Image (cartoon, rainbow, N blue to C red; front, top):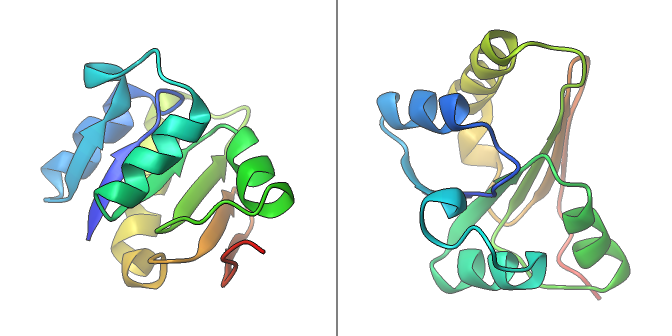
Length: 119
């Protein structure tokens, strides 16, 4: 599976996932100024799971019913970059096959993977 990392994702996280062998495009390297709608559209067009720390994607999917190929929203406030990178890397190794076409939320204490495809 392929990943599109939103500009809200720290580059060290992107680099760590690349080192683990994931096919990951980082929006900040190519299209950093595009809107969230266009980021989601780009992820869908390329059949990529969207990795983000931006809650606005939850709004796009749940309230506006936008279709997605999978969204992973992580909420790891208070952690330094090394802690975030280590945790996200472990979550990907343990759960990546479950994320396709799901809306997932990752926090320090919980991983929620929901089958939600808009209205």
